[in-house]
Image 1 (tube, rainbow, N blue to C red):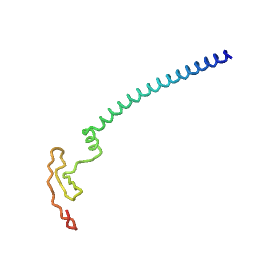
Image 2: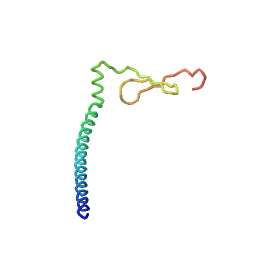
Image 3: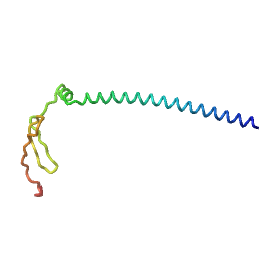
Image 4: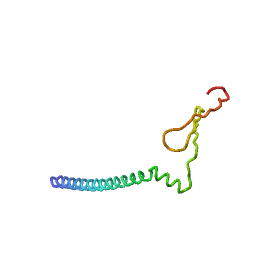
Length: 106
């Protein structure tokens, strides 16, 4: 009976050792995958940053025929309007008079 108990303990220790080794192997594989994904994420973020530059977007827009309007008009939810040059830079907008709403409230 003692031999059976000792045999079961040895088998249990061996099985535990195998499970620990498998866990360590899986942890190493996951760490390598994480490092690869971090590298890929950095490369993709760099690509997005390059593709998002205003100069590149403006160049691409010109290449497909898009142009800026001469005048831009902004209509606010309260009904007021502003118009101004479409040139980027300090705001040059000037208010535009708008008629009152039909119910007399502005």
